[in-house]
Image 1 (tube, helix red, strand yellow):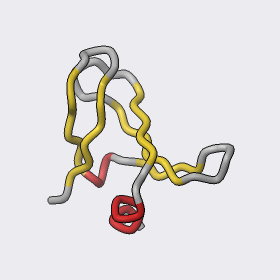
Image 2 (cartoon, rainbow, N blue to C red):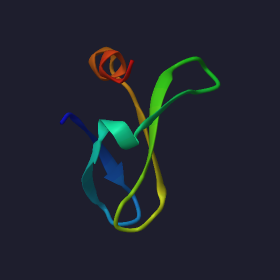
Image 3 (cartoon, rainbow, N blue to C red):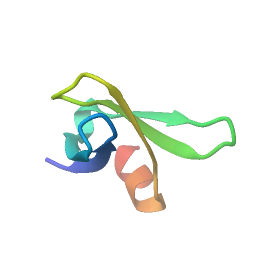
Image 4 (cartoon, rainbow, N blue to C red):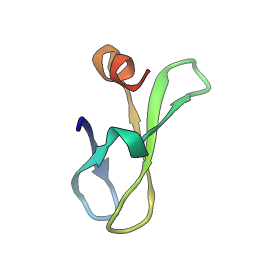
Length: 58
């Protein structure tokens, strides 16, 4: 299955999260972003999406 790569600030490393566990949100300025939970630490992670990643989440 497809994954999206996030950066976890708390654990200071890149984390790949399955697309089924990613929630697509819109920021205040209108940009598409992704929100996910770090499986190791349980903290929220955000990533501003590129056009290709945004199309994959639709």
